[in-house]
Length: 336
Image (tube, rainbow, N blue to C red; front, side):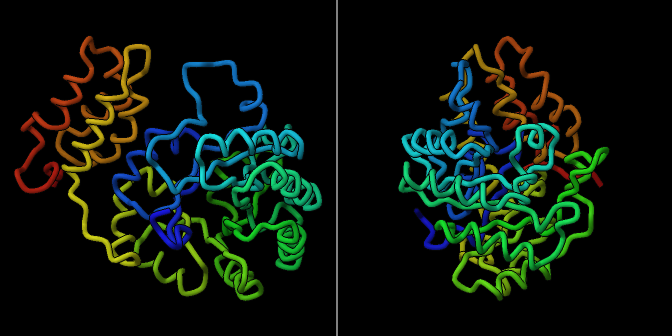
Protein backbone atom coordinates (compact mmCIF):
# COMPACT_ATOMS: atom_id res chain seq x y z
CA UNK A 1 0.00 0.00 0.00
CA UNK A 2 1.16 3.52 -0.75
CA UNK A 3 -0.06 4.93 2.53
CA UNK A 4 1.18 3.58 5.87
CA UNK A 5 -2.22 4.44 7.35
CA UNK A 6 -4.75 4.27 4.49
CA UNK A 7 -7.61 4.41 7.00
CA UNK A 8 -7.06 8.04 7.92
CA UNK A 9 -8.98 8.93 4.73
CA UNK A 10 -11.56 6.54 3.27
CA UNK A 11 -14.31 6.70 0.67
CA UNK A 12 -17.44 4.81 1.68
CA UNK A 13 -18.88 1.94 -0.37
CA UNK A 14 -21.83 3.44 -2.27
CA UNK A 15 -24.25 1.59 -4.48
CA UNK A 16 -24.35 3.05 -7.97
CA UNK A 17 -21.25 5.15 -7.36
CA UNK A 18 -18.04 3.42 -6.23
CA UNK A 19 -17.68 1.21 -9.26
CA UNK A 20 -14.44 0.37 -11.09
CA UNK A 21 -14.48 3.60 -13.12
CA UNK A 22 -15.18 6.00 -10.25
CA UNK A 23 -12.51 4.34 -8.13
CA UNK A 24 -9.99 4.78 -10.95
CA UNK A 25 -10.95 8.46 -11.20
CA UNK A 26 -10.64 8.93 -7.43
CA UNK A 27 -7.24 7.26 -7.44
CA UNK A 28 -6.03 9.88 -9.92
CA UNK A 29 -7.04 12.49 -7.34
CA UNK A 30 -5.73 10.77 -4.21
CA UNK A 31 -3.03 8.13 -3.98
CA UNK A 32 -3.65 7.80 -0.24
CA UNK A 33 -7.40 7.33 0.26
CA UNK A 34 -8.71 3.85 1.08
CA UNK A 35 -11.37 3.05 -1.52
CA UNK A 36 -14.17 0.48 -1.44
CA UNK A 37 -16.29 -1.33 -3.97
CA UNK A 38 -20.03 -1.11 -4.01
CA UNK A 39 -21.63 -3.65 -1.72
CA UNK A 40 -22.10 -6.97 -3.49
CA UNK A 41 -24.25 -9.75 -2.04
CA UNK A 42 -22.66 -13.19 -1.83
CA UNK A 43 -25.05 -14.80 -4.30
CA UNK A 44 -24.17 -12.22 -6.94
CA UNK A 45 -20.57 -13.43 -6.72
CA UNK A 46 -21.22 -17.15 -6.46
CA UNK A 47 -23.86 -17.17 -9.21
CA UNK A 48 -22.64 -14.38 -11.49
CA UNK A 49 -23.87 -15.25 -15.00
CA UNK A 50 -23.22 -11.98 -16.77
CA UNK A 51 -20.04 -11.36 -18.70
CA UNK A 52 -20.91 -7.74 -19.50
CA UNK A 53 -19.90 -6.28 -16.16
CA UNK A 54 -17.97 -7.96 -13.39
CA UNK A 55 -18.04 -5.99 -10.14
CA UNK A 56 -15.01 -7.90 -8.92
CA UNK A 57 -12.76 -6.29 -11.50
CA UNK A 58 -10.66 -3.28 -10.60
CA UNK A 59 -7.92 -1.25 -12.22
CA UNK A 60 -4.93 0.38 -10.49
CA UNK A 61 -7.05 1.52 -7.55
CA UNK A 62 -5.24 -0.05 -4.59
CA UNK A 63 -5.47 0.27 -1.66
CA UNK A 64 -9.04 -0.92 -2.13
CA UNK A 65 -11.42 -3.06 -0.12
CA UNK A 66 -14.30 -5.19 -1.36
CA UNK A 67 -17.56 -4.90 0.55
CA UNK A 68 -19.63 -8.06 0.98
CA UNK A 69 -23.22 -8.50 2.09
CA UNK A 70 -24.42 -11.80 3.51
CA UNK A 71 -25.09 -13.87 6.61
CA UNK A 72 -24.01 -17.36 5.53
CA UNK A 73 -20.50 -18.05 6.88
CA UNK A 74 -19.79 -20.75 4.30
CA UNK A 75 -20.84 -18.61 1.33
CA UNK A 76 -18.94 -15.60 2.63
CA UNK A 77 -15.85 -17.75 3.02
CA UNK A 78 -16.14 -18.97 -0.58
CA UNK A 79 -16.48 -15.38 -1.76
CA UNK A 80 -13.44 -14.32 0.24
CA UNK A 81 -11.22 -16.70 -1.68
CA UNK A 82 -12.52 -15.32 -4.99
CA UNK A 83 -12.07 -11.71 -3.87
CA UNK A 84 -8.50 -12.33 -2.77
CA UNK A 85 -7.69 -13.76 -6.20
CA UNK A 86 -8.67 -10.41 -7.75
CA UNK A 87 -6.05 -8.51 -5.77
CA UNK A 88 -8.10 -6.62 -3.22
CA UNK A 89 -6.48 -5.42 0.01
CA UNK A 90 -9.35 -6.05 2.40
CA UNK A 91 -12.76 -7.64 2.84
CA UNK A 92 -15.36 -5.42 4.45
CA UNK A 93 -18.62 -6.79 5.87
CA UNK A 94 -21.69 -4.63 5.50
CA UNK A 95 -23.59 -4.50 8.80
CA UNK A 96 -25.12 -1.11 8.06
CA UNK A 97 -27.34 -1.25 4.96
CA UNK A 98 -30.97 -0.64 6.03
CA UNK A 99 -32.66 -1.49 2.70
CA UNK A 100 -35.63 -3.84 2.50
CA UNK A 101 -33.60 -6.10 0.22
CA UNK A 102 -30.88 -6.38 2.86
CA UNK A 103 -33.43 -7.08 5.57
CA UNK A 104 -35.16 -9.77 3.52
CA UNK A 105 -31.78 -11.45 2.95
CA UNK A 106 -30.81 -11.03 6.62
CA UNK A 107 -27.70 -8.97 5.93
CA UNK A 108 -26.75 -5.34 6.38
CA UNK A 109 -28.04 -3.45 9.42
CA UNK A 110 -30.31 -6.22 10.68
CA UNK A 111 -27.18 -8.27 11.51
CA UNK A 112 -26.32 -5.69 14.17
CA UNK A 113 -28.77 -7.55 16.41
CA UNK A 114 -26.94 -10.84 15.68
CA UNK A 115 -23.29 -10.29 16.66
CA UNK A 116 -22.68 -14.02 17.14
CA UNK A 117 -23.55 -14.64 13.49
CA UNK A 118 -21.26 -11.80 12.40
CA UNK A 119 -18.46 -13.29 14.53
CA UNK A 120 -19.04 -16.71 12.97
CA UNK A 121 -18.90 -15.15 9.50
CA UNK A 122 -15.58 -13.50 10.33
CA UNK A 123 -14.21 -16.76 11.71
CA UNK A 124 -15.11 -18.70 8.56
CA UNK A 125 -13.86 -16.00 6.19
CA UNK A 126 -10.50 -15.91 7.95
CA UNK A 127 -10.06 -19.62 7.22
CA UNK A 128 -10.12 -18.94 3.48
CA UNK A 129 -8.13 -15.72 3.10
CA UNK A 130 -5.14 -13.86 4.48
CA UNK A 131 -6.83 -10.52 3.79
CA UNK A 132 -7.82 -8.38 6.78
CA UNK A 133 -11.53 -8.45 7.56
CA UNK A 134 -13.20 -5.20 8.59
CA UNK A 135 -16.76 -4.27 9.54
CA UNK A 136 -18.86 -1.26 8.58
CA UNK A 137 -21.85 -0.76 10.85
CA UNK A 138 -24.24 1.76 12.33
CA UNK A 139 -24.22 2.77 16.00
CA UNK A 140 -27.39 0.80 16.56
CA UNK A 141 -30.77 -0.15 15.14
CA UNK A 142 -34.25 0.73 16.32
CA UNK A 143 -34.41 -0.19 20.03
CA UNK A 144 -30.78 -1.34 20.20
CA UNK A 145 -29.61 2.22 20.60
CA UNK A 146 -27.08 2.46 23.41
CA UNK A 147 -23.33 2.50 23.68
CA UNK A 148 -23.22 -0.59 25.91
CA UNK A 149 -24.78 -2.77 23.21
CA UNK A 150 -22.45 -1.28 20.60
CA UNK A 151 -19.44 -2.14 22.77
CA UNK A 152 -20.79 -5.67 23.29
CA UNK A 153 -21.10 -6.02 19.51
CA UNK A 154 -17.50 -4.87 19.03
CA UNK A 155 -16.28 -7.19 21.80
CA UNK A 156 -17.88 -10.25 20.20
CA UNK A 157 -16.85 -9.47 16.63
CA UNK A 158 -13.32 -8.26 17.40
CA UNK A 159 -12.67 -11.48 19.34
CA UNK A 160 -12.52 -13.22 15.93
CA UNK A 161 -9.83 -10.91 14.62
CA UNK A 162 -11.55 -7.76 13.33
CA UNK A 163 -9.26 -4.82 14.06
CA UNK A 164 -11.00 -2.09 12.05
CA UNK A 165 -14.58 -0.86 12.48
CA UNK A 166 -16.12 1.82 10.25
CA UNK A 167 -18.88 3.44 12.28
CA UNK A 168 -21.60 5.41 10.54
CA UNK A 169 -22.40 7.82 13.35
CA UNK A 170 -26.15 7.27 13.55
CA UNK A 171 -28.46 4.34 14.10
CA UNK A 172 -30.41 2.65 11.32
CA UNK A 173 -34.20 2.69 11.47
CA UNK A 174 -35.56 -0.53 10.03
CA UNK A 175 -39.19 0.40 10.54
CA UNK A 176 -41.68 0.32 7.71
CA UNK A 177 -41.77 3.57 5.74
CA UNK A 178 -38.16 4.58 6.44
CA UNK A 179 -36.15 4.11 3.25
CA UNK A 180 -32.33 4.07 2.79
CA UNK A 181 -32.29 7.72 1.72
CA UNK A 182 -34.01 8.80 4.93
CA UNK A 183 -31.65 6.57 6.89
CA UNK A 184 -28.75 8.72 5.66
CA UNK A 185 -30.19 11.82 7.35
CA UNK A 186 -32.25 10.63 10.33
CA UNK A 187 -31.99 10.31 13.22
CA UNK A 188 -29.49 12.94 14.32
CA UNK A 189 -25.78 12.24 13.88
CA UNK A 190 -23.91 11.22 17.05
CA UNK A 191 -20.16 11.77 16.76
CA UNK A 192 -19.61 11.69 20.50
CA UNK A 193 -20.66 8.05 20.71
CA UNK A 194 -18.01 7.18 18.11
CA UNK A 195 -15.40 9.11 20.11
CA UNK A 196 -16.43 7.21 23.22
CA UNK A 197 -16.01 3.89 21.44
CA UNK A 198 -12.52 4.89 20.34
CA UNK A 199 -11.59 5.82 23.92
CA UNK A 200 -12.80 2.39 25.02
CA UNK A 201 -10.82 0.54 22.31
CA UNK A 202 -7.42 2.23 21.87
CA UNK A 203 -6.00 -0.82 20.06
CA UNK A 204 -8.82 -1.07 17.49
CA UNK A 205 -8.99 1.28 14.51
CA UNK A 206 -12.22 3.26 14.61
CA UNK A 207 -13.16 5.06 11.39
CA UNK A 208 -15.84 7.76 11.56
CA UNK A 209 -18.45 8.00 8.78
CA UNK A 210 -21.40 10.34 8.38
CA UNK A 211 -21.96 13.93 7.19
CA UNK A 212 -18.27 14.82 6.88
CA UNK A 213 -18.43 17.50 4.21
CA UNK A 214 -15.57 19.86 5.04
CA UNK A 215 -11.79 19.20 4.98
CA UNK A 216 -11.13 21.16 8.17
CA UNK A 217 -13.89 19.31 10.02
CA UNK A 218 -12.42 16.02 8.79
CA UNK A 219 -9.06 16.97 10.31
CA UNK A 220 -10.73 17.85 13.62
CA UNK A 221 -12.34 14.40 13.78
CA UNK A 222 -8.89 12.85 13.43
CA UNK A 223 -8.07 14.16 16.90
CA UNK A 224 -10.53 11.60 18.29
CA UNK A 225 -10.62 8.68 15.82
CA UNK A 226 -8.20 6.81 13.56
CA UNK A 227 -9.76 7.89 10.29
CA UNK A 228 -12.64 9.52 8.48
CA UNK A 229 -14.82 7.98 5.78
CA UNK A 230 -16.52 10.28 3.28
CA UNK A 231 -19.63 9.35 1.34
CA UNK A 232 -21.96 11.42 -0.87
CA UNK A 233 -19.78 14.52 -0.65
CA UNK A 234 -17.18 12.70 -2.78
CA UNK A 235 -19.79 12.06 -5.48
CA UNK A 236 -20.60 15.77 -5.53
CA UNK A 237 -17.01 16.99 -5.19
CA UNK A 238 -14.34 14.32 -5.80
CA UNK A 239 -11.55 16.85 -5.37
CA UNK A 240 -12.34 17.16 -1.66
CA UNK A 241 -10.02 14.16 -1.33
CA UNK A 242 -7.13 16.28 -2.58
CA UNK A 243 -8.10 19.07 -0.17
CA UNK A 244 -7.91 16.64 2.75
CA UNK A 245 -4.71 15.05 1.43
CA UNK A 246 -3.11 18.48 1.46
CA UNK A 247 -3.97 18.85 5.14
CA UNK A 248 -3.16 15.39 6.46
CA UNK A 249 -0.76 13.84 3.94
CA UNK A 250 1.24 16.91 2.87
CA UNK A 251 0.18 16.46 -0.75
CA UNK A 252 0.29 19.16 -3.42
CA UNK A 253 -2.83 20.59 -5.04
CA UNK A 254 -3.86 18.54 -8.07
CA UNK A 255 -4.37 20.10 -11.50
CA UNK A 256 -7.95 19.34 -12.51
CA UNK A 257 -7.25 19.61 -16.22
CA UNK A 258 -4.48 17.02 -15.94
CA UNK A 259 -6.79 14.68 -14.01
CA UNK A 260 -9.44 15.02 -16.70
CA UNK A 261 -6.90 14.34 -19.43
CA UNK A 262 -5.75 11.16 -17.67
CA UNK A 263 -9.32 9.99 -17.12
CA UNK A 264 -10.16 10.68 -20.76
CA UNK A 265 -7.18 8.53 -21.75
CA UNK A 266 -8.53 5.78 -19.46
CA UNK A 267 -11.95 5.98 -21.14
CA UNK A 268 -10.32 5.94 -24.56
CA UNK A 269 -8.38 2.79 -23.66
CA UNK A 270 -11.25 0.88 -22.02
CA UNK A 271 -14.46 1.90 -23.76
CA UNK A 272 -15.87 -0.35 -26.47
CA UNK A 273 -19.13 -0.24 -28.37
CA UNK A 274 -20.97 -2.85 -26.33
CA UNK A 275 -20.57 -0.62 -23.25
CA UNK A 276 -22.46 2.46 -22.15
CA UNK A 277 -20.00 5.31 -22.28
CA UNK A 278 -22.03 7.04 -19.58
CA UNK A 279 -20.88 4.33 -17.15
CA UNK A 280 -17.54 6.16 -17.41
CA UNK A 281 -18.71 9.74 -17.80
CA UNK A 282 -21.52 9.97 -15.24
CA UNK A 283 -18.85 10.41 -12.58
CA UNK A 284 -17.73 13.66 -14.25
CA UNK A 285 -21.12 15.36 -14.27
CA UNK A 286 -20.68 16.84 -10.79
CA UNK A 287 -17.57 18.78 -11.88
CA UNK A 288 -19.62 21.07 -14.10
CA UNK A 289 -22.45 21.92 -11.72
CA UNK A 290 -22.83 25.67 -11.38
CA UNK A 291 -20.73 26.50 -14.44
CA UNK A 292 -21.80 28.11 -17.70
CA UNK A 293 -23.30 25.43 -19.94
CA UNK A 294 -23.33 22.87 -17.15
CA UNK A 295 -26.89 21.66 -17.70
CA UNK A 296 -26.07 20.80 -21.30
CA UNK A 297 -22.77 19.14 -20.34
CA UNK A 298 -24.18 17.12 -17.46
CA UNK A 299 -27.03 15.81 -19.62
CA UNK A 300 -24.46 14.49 -22.05
CA UNK A 301 -22.31 12.99 -19.32
CA UNK A 302 -25.23 11.08 -17.80
CA UNK A 303 -27.43 10.20 -20.77
CA UNK A 304 -27.01 11.64 -24.24
CA UNK A 305 -23.48 10.46 -25.01
CA UNK A 306 -24.91 6.96 -25.36
CA UNK A 307 -26.74 8.08 -28.51
CA UNK A 308 -23.75 9.66 -30.26
CA UNK A 309 -22.29 7.82 -33.25
CA UNK A 310 -18.80 8.83 -32.14
CA UNK A 311 -19.11 9.34 -28.37
CA UNK A 312 -15.38 9.65 -27.70
CA UNK A 313 -15.04 12.53 -30.11
CA UNK A 314 -18.07 14.25 -28.59
CA UNK A 315 -16.69 13.69 -25.10
CA UNK A 316 -13.33 15.16 -26.07
CA UNK A 317 -15.08 18.21 -27.45
CA UNK A 318 -17.15 18.63 -24.29
CA UNK A 319 -14.15 18.32 -22.02
CA UNK A 320 -11.44 20.17 -23.87
CA UNK A 321 -12.63 22.06 -26.95
CA UNK A 322 -15.81 23.96 -26.18
CA UNK A 323 -14.54 27.46 -25.44
CA UNK A 324 -18.01 28.49 -24.32
CA UNK A 325 -17.10 27.26 -20.82
CA UNK A 326 -13.35 27.78 -20.60
CA UNK A 327 -11.89 30.88 -19.00
CA UNK A 328 -8.18 30.24 -19.59
CA UNK A 329 -7.43 30.10 -15.85
CA UNK A 330 -9.61 27.51 -14.19
CA UNK A 331 -11.40 24.54 -15.67
CA UNK A 332 -14.63 26.37 -16.48
CA UNK A 333 -16.22 29.76 -15.93
CA UNK A 334 -18.41 29.90 -12.87
CA UNK A 335 -21.93 31.24 -13.23
CA UNK A 336 -22.20 34.52 -11.31
